[in-house]
Image: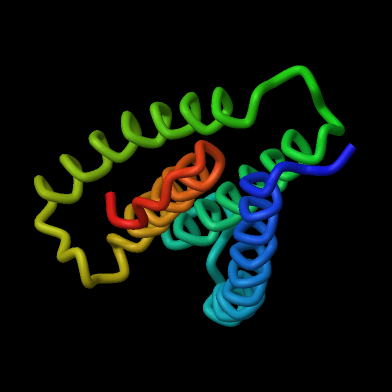
Length: 135
């Protein structure tokens, strides 16, 4: 069974994004190890969010190519976006209370969550056949 054009485009986007994340993660994990950061510590949160993003994309790839018919890709995207939005609202409120700058290190996990959500929104657009790259 051939994949629809939208599915092929989504898989291409997923492949490119995973490759970018893996490259960044390799660098960031080496840096974290060099600095003595613990995987369950605050300073490691951006790396954890990047891993989560990568896992989410791999799960979507599995759904799209039909290896897991138990869930629809758009359903998965919608549920994950809702989860991220909820977490982001809390984390952004916390950051504001603590006076963190969006350009600062402490804000990196929030930035990675935003990036994750953006890529899921972009995939949703691709899968429903719309090209509204600005959300």
